[in-house]
Image (tube, rainbow, N blue to C red; front, side, top):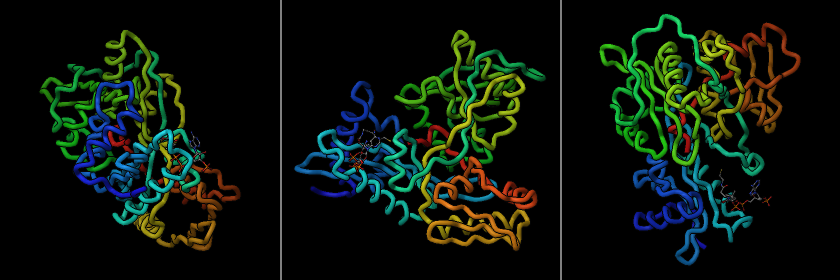
Length: 363
Ligand SMILES: CC(C)(COP(=O)(O)OP(=O)(O)OC[C@H]1O[C@@H](n2cnc3c(N)ncnc32)[C@H](O)[C@@H]1OP(=O)(O)O)[C@@H](O)C(=O)NCCC(=O)NCCS
């Protein structure tokens, strides 16, 4: 057996053949058009395969992403397309491949790794844990709009990537993207983009539904003003002849959440994904810097084998497990018993740190 290693350039078509057969047998597109920035020649050094006798047996890919937030810039290794040939499962191949991916992500200074899965126990063995806050709202009625303005709505992906980028860049938390990357995302099969334009031809809001085989009926990307988005959601419902759809919203996007709550739309709380800390020292340094920036000058973090202490002056909060630690940092807030009001207030000012990956970045 060979690997785990990155494929050579001339092996890339074979790798795609393997992925298409194992992960997309019923679809008429190739997986690289679904994940155009991950399964691409320019990311080949971040792909890992195990081969035997010229056959690919196991695969995973990392896509390093820079996530900007008001309090920190995170380097995140998103992991995807984890798969082992059915005849070679339960021999440790995926575990070995994932370990290689994580080592590579660490080499590239990623602070954390993230992935999207329902195989929680499989990934917990590699110290991933559910964390981050995602709230979903099923839009099941027409929304009331305050101060409605004259907007023109459109359905379709033939729109300017630059216009999307301009609105996307206004998010407080987002990954660094180029217009070229957005152009590629707009070409993903089964991606539908809805847009709202004002009378001067400026993009006011956009919403993206579906992504290849995933997220049908889910708005996983959106941007623009709350009022523009509410009007756009009404338009989307009309185009779907009143059929319900779900909007996925970061925990920190409280204005859009409030507008939907005011309309009686019920939220469901979930996790952003499964996250693993790759570089504790870098993560703790970023948190400490963020604490200083908001005036918590006496904040320190102390790391022990199985626990972590957050110290505010002479008061201490202890995260007793890796799970508590990742959920303290990125939410949703785990209940840590025994905190007085002052200490809980300080914790709430610092945590959770806002972290979000828009749907197009999920791999
Ligand atoms: C999940 C998958 C990648 C594991 O690959 P693998 O090479 O067999 O993995 P490993 O041999 O390293 O580890 C197997 C372990 O995972 C566990 N596992 C496998 N599938 C699992 C599942 N669906 N749920 C929970 N655990 C699972 C096995 O029980 C085994 O545990 P053990 O070592 O304690 O016996 C493989 O089953 C696969 O390709 N599945 C289809 C594609 C897929 O679902 N990918 C994951 C997308 S996030």
